[in-house]
Length: 289
Ligand SMILES: Nc1ncnc2c1ncn2[C@@H]1O[C@H](COP(=O)(O)OP(=O)(O)OP(=O)(O)O)[C@@H](O)[C@H]1O
Image (spheres, rainbow, N blue to C red):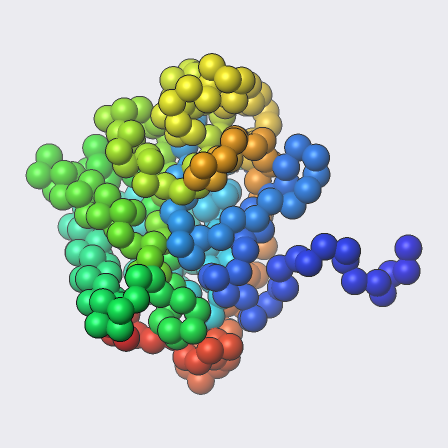
């Protein structure tokens, strides 16, 4: 094959021109075909047992967001180390601190309300790339840490209420949520919350029930159960998109060194006076429009 020939498929361009409105490459399917998701108007839930590869997927998405100059990152990472390499380019990086987590979620809720007020004033329903407002990508590594482990019961309940509101209303306002849990159980992911995630990825699960809690009721009985995934096949998952059928995927994986390189590059691209988005400079957090 002529080495100068362009790839036959229209891939996502690599580099500072990425946008959160572009498809995000997250891995390959069982036929070796690339798998993309579009997060601008959808949320993603990743569930499965420890070590299945959830954080790997979150980091791949964080890398796309980091390279998208129309995106800002808000990271909640109870373990500090799963998303910690993106800290310097994130608007907020919250470790195991429920007070800080609640403060940033309240602020995001306010930004979301401001954006809805702006949309309403303009007779619109959702933001588009042309609005020049940044997509605020919110990544939560381990929902259960904030909703069931740290803090008082009241704080945990407030966390769940704020997260639910963000997942329910954030996507049209350019605030998608990507969340992971190693505890796919009804108390952590009730059906009403699960169904608000347009994309769901079930990494290896120990029971068909926990696989169903991520993918949706009945999929395990129809042959789509993340219990089939061997523990040695980290990064393998069933991915379902709203209204579709689960698809077996192998998530892309970035090593720590690769993440460090991308984070450095993203910081350089985002330096004051650096590159702007194709549509302009990302607007500030506090802005409604
Ligand atoms: N897509 C992948 N391809 C190859 N190896 C992977 C992939 N994803 C994860 N791994 C391997 O599995 C290990 C655990 O992955 P990861 O930390 O993402 O799991 P996790 O589900 O987030 O676990 P936890 O719930 O404990 O945070 C990684 O350190 C890596 O070695």
